[in-house]
Image (cartoon, rainbow, N blue to C red; front, side, top):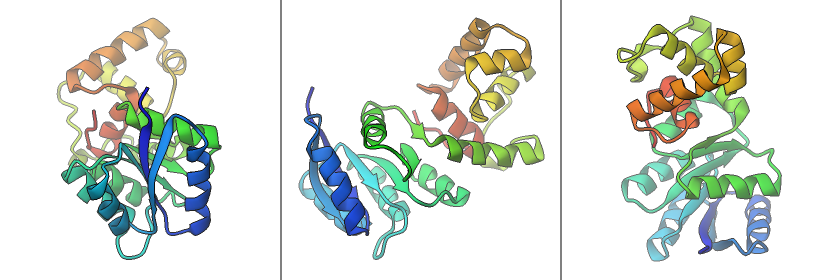
Length: 216
């Protein structure tokens, strides 16, 4: 397998150096550079295109949200947001700008590497706590804010129940128990919904339901 080329962007020297060491010692990764802000990360990417950016949100000069927008619009790579902040609005902005993943900085080195690999391979990833926070917004009003962009019209009441349960972070088994149907039936429903929306995984479905943003 080719090495996954990574650019790290974080305004903390300690965080940048730590992540660089973690990735440099793994033969699956190659760190192309470490930037102190989004502008530096973009400048590095224009010289040597990375596969994945590991991007902090709050940085001087250019923050991670602005940088993500530029990176996605110019096809410079995929972005994994990694931050100490779990502000729901920041999550939505980052996802709306095209970030493929969003994780809080409480990970193990192995978890970080696995998430980078997932983003590299086209899967969306999101910290479970963040997903639950977004789901809580929906639960408060017991329905999706239709201004979010999610279109419920193609779905039956049962399908919407399953989509909402996926967004709440429930497993197929838990959804089956909640709705009194088999785990296999849940799996079939989810497969059909993903196909209908042209989405590749359940995290993308959850994000679409909660934010109105599609990410294949």
